[in-house]
Image 1 (cartoon, rainbow, N blue to C red):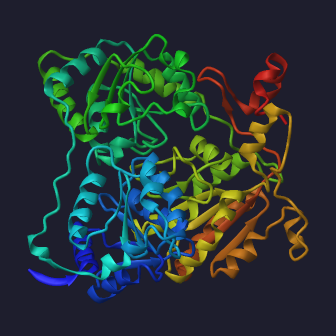
Image 2 (cartoon, rainbow, N blue to C red):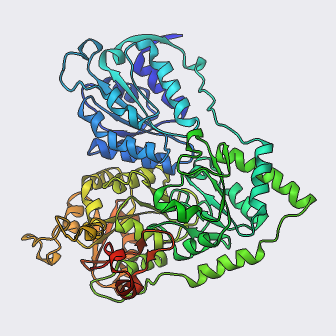
Image 3 (tube, rainbow, N blue to C red):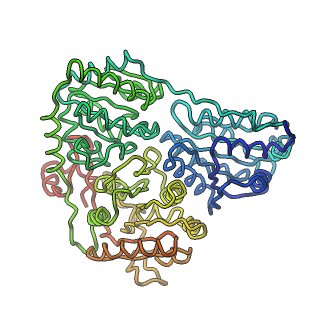
Length: 592
């Protein structure tokens, strides 16, 4: 045993738990913790420009770095409240992340002291645990429980709030006697696996729906093996995109009202039996439940018991970690195939492949200003299968999900449920930390890009190179589309005549000058035939200068992306005239 400050014990625990990647900014109430990091060494700290940005960096790092947990640190008061959006984004998508805040002395917590706020209560709804540690001797146990909870069951974030006097107090602590707790994860039984396969293999047109839980469990290879063993096509959710490579013969696309493929929706509507593994049945995936569930049997495997039956009641629910479930499903499936044989789904799989080959959306437009579809076509040509894409919300994310290609797990990093504007840039910086040396490409609309644009300076200062594609129509495009149902176009335009940058041609903010002013490189592209050269130059600049490189594509002001109200009622933009004639009220969100 040794006598040390509680914060010295805390950093020793972080190191032993493998959480040495820190994002945040110091301040008076957290300075003792920073002094412990400095004295101990071994930590990689990235100085954010905004505390919310720091939380998104830690979130992005956790999503990208297999098995590692990002840590966000900040001082008391507004630092903690600024982290709330980051905690929400992580909690909504089942991402482990540790936030550590400084706090006023324990005796001052009820006195409205400077920057003293009850962050424990504020953060409680968006964390697995939120705790103000009021006794120095509780520090080791609080950190130990935090890591246990972040890794157990459905993963999620934790906030630990440390009063400054608690940080400075001395405790007896022996790091050699500290052991991380073994996470608790439910596992499917053999009997459950047998019943699941009984239902699945009784179907004539079965599908596997792969959710983000498969990626969290690092079980993508097992899922692909099961699909190949049974020759059953796989539908990925937005959070599960990359579980199976887009070019795999059994990859049947994504399903949904927005972030979906025409062939994915068509295949799902043909199916009769579905097993969902590690997914939530999110509403943007299902659309109306009557359409989604009609004529189908469902098996639902999820690590969180209360997710089973939350959206609709399955024919069979199994509470299990996705990896544990796939292990036993594979074991039973191998035995059945060897002993009794399994149905031949070759014809069904070929039908799914045929739809994939024939139901592609048009991307090759030569219009000037550019259509966004052409930008994604050029991105597919420019960036290889090892690319990791980062995006969050808006028409840019929806179109990107419809048209980009992803070839592996943790190569599509997306704030799926919360979708906070501004998330993309800081999250991308965290992804670069989590995947050093690997190609990272972020995708934003102009508004998402502007929300936390100051974080570009972090990439310049710490040499975190990635390419940020900004599709700029100077509009809140998705909000404009949703306002059409109310017959208005109200405060959704970002355009103005920039007196300092007439070259922006009325589009307003000069993203090139801003990016360069923050220490990065930037390229503006106005014609589709120039996109390939711009991406090649961006790669060169990124490699030479080791900073973020912005590629801004100037789009048509008003643009439309395919979406709809039901899986069988997605309005394809090529058919807009037909929809306008046949069902004018159904396309208010798409019609100009």
